[in-house]
Length: 79
Image 1 (tube, rainbow, N blue to C red):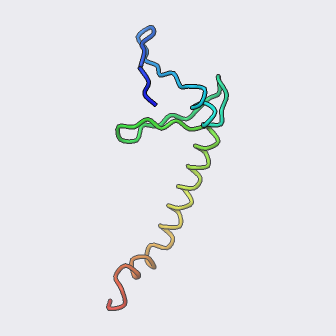
Image 2 (spheres, helix red, strand yellow; image 1 turned 180 degrees about the vertical axis):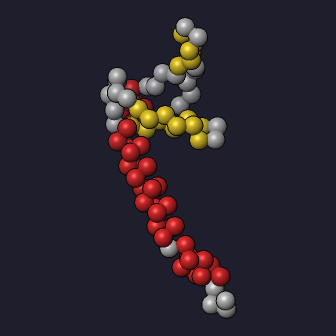
Image 3 (cartoon, helix red, strand yellow; image 1 turned 90 degrees about the horizontal axis):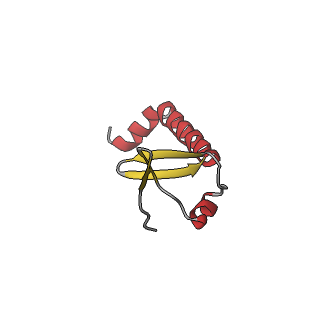
């Protein structure tokens, strides 16, 4: 879905189609989470952004907690 960036009062904006708004599960006027990932813009509902952050936090916690076990598995049985 190609869109054109417009400028109003020295600020740039990007309009999303009603289909994109519906796909996000939000309504016009709703607050959304905007994140820059590399050279991409990720737009999510606030609820989706919160769930994503909780998942990442939990995943990172488990990786830290199990680091030794994962390192031993990666080294294999000969170590």
